[in-house]
Length: 366
Image (tube, rainbow, N blue to C red):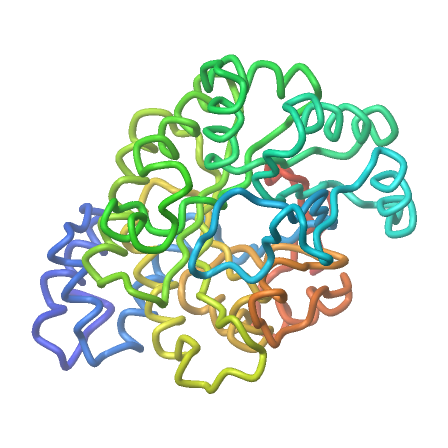
């Protein structure tokens, strides 16, 4: 007998599938997006997460670094990029990079999260040196740098293969790829929203090669603009298929689209209902991903906390100073302290686990 029931008859078969461990189809995902019974969907996602991760919720002490905001691409959703001749454009020198990190570094920091523009005004050595300089001065800190879209960009500007580019980055000290640049992995979406960046196949190929070279990586989905529910699910299924082959993804991060202005109306932002539904469906569809991350930068601290009952097992980290989402209109905090993260996790009746980049526990806050 099922321990989870719903007044919505369209969920009956899905509940049975989830409880027996059977994989959900795209049609199942569409039924989940259409069902009025959000609480049962959340209950199903919570059931799956508890089986995978028990009561543990993870976070990391990390620092965001955006070495440059100059970018050749003109994505419709981005408020961070600048043209080279813009007064707001910047590209950190090695000295500026070390000063920026030195002013923000704290003992216990485990990860540098590096994402920036596709700056075509500098050569590939700039990106290699960014990693090697940080690795030299902070050898104990993992470097999470450059999205799959940036890997394709590096290959294009150097005339080399993505494998060669990744091998050079790994030699410089790269430890993992972040999940950005994925947006929505369909060509209809990318043609309209990010036509200057890597294709769906390019992004997936970059991560496949990274996995084959021994890296564990991250995956995101930027939802809440022109994509359809079917495209969101296609995105998840493409990731799931690659994970079946490589087992290289550690976590999936649904990212709510931010409007271009902080003064944008609430109708230009994703709703709490959509955020929680997408979090839960991510957990249900991505059955081969260890973790789903609730990103408080995009959905706020309260919804991030609530996500821990909707399938999420990770609250990301301290961040120190997030810029990209806030440049695009995010209203949330730019950082959280360890005490605040632990408070949020304990408030959801979960066990807070400080981790490193690869989900190895460092400290348990019971």
